[in-house]
Length: 134
Image (cartoon, rainbow, N blue to C red; front, side, top):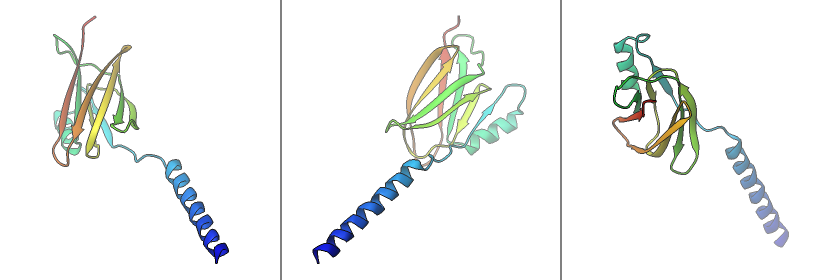
């Protein structure tokens, strides 16, 4: 009886170890995202991207409001997990995130700005990043 019970425990531990290893090895779900550019994209296309995602981020210079492109983006879940790293070739960036608390780091010409935000079950979150002029 003790042997059978010990084998059961050993088998359960082995299954748990395999399940945890598979979970750790599986990649994080891909985050749908897109970027829009001034001039290249029709305003109707940009609005369609905006409607298709629950996060919109705009990059510009403080004061003039001139739009910025080629911005590095890192998005982290409140657990600390990095959920997306990419570059936005245009001043409009869109992503679809699950409900929760997040932080976004946006880097332009070596200067990183960060914002914390929440995504709800419904609706869209709009964020604006403004860098000081040089």
